[in-house]
Length: 332
Image (cartoon, rainbow, N blue to C red):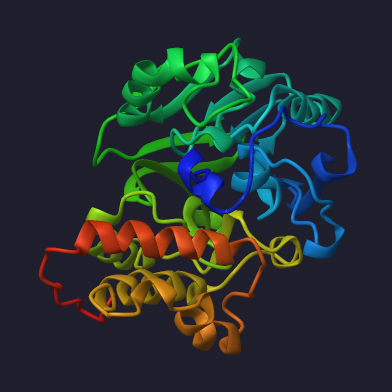
């Protein structure tokens, strides 16, 4: 989830502060075994009532409050790590856990350039580091601002270790992690530089930020029709379970979300565009857009997504103000 811009934070009465230590309760990392070769590492998603008043910072708003997961595919002495949390301490916790499990060779894959996915990249400075070429270019251009703490405000990510292998658009990279096949797919969903990982033998997708529970954060509103179509294409790959980076830890622990989760995201972004010319569009609550998916059990209402939804309404309204509403094909 891309952190809300500073202007949006100010509008919500929130301010920026230094990050909390990775060891405190809100930032404690826990390992969740998905199967014998896939582990989720999870942080956050506190109940609203348990969050004390006070300053907020981008790791809280973009990761901790909504909950954030990273993943490791591991077999024998090799692990493919998917994203690195918001800070080096949390990423080091994951590496230490994997080392204790016998891993000696690490490969990093980055889902996209947003800060809550790259904070601990420095922990893998000695490793192969995959991302899309678009991510590599974007992070190279933004490196100085990210290291200075001016890209999304403090805290800075310093040093920012860049990907050293860029994947071209429309290319699929297949890696064997021991006996486990992992396919790295570039996708222009949520962010134009996205990278998801499919485990075809498990019929499972590591979805990054392409899907979120309760609702996706709209980072690039102009391309929502193309994202809608790309989600439909992705739906046909053959996976039956989905593990997002921002989701309900209980669902993740149960093995992941079903395809209805993807359908809920398509419905949400389609509705945003189709209603963007409504006179009361920016006052329409999140429940109006996700009620059917909640009733089906495809997603659940989680409190920080009301602010994310408000941000989505504002960005979509601005992007589509003077544009005709496109027709969406309901078929995948």
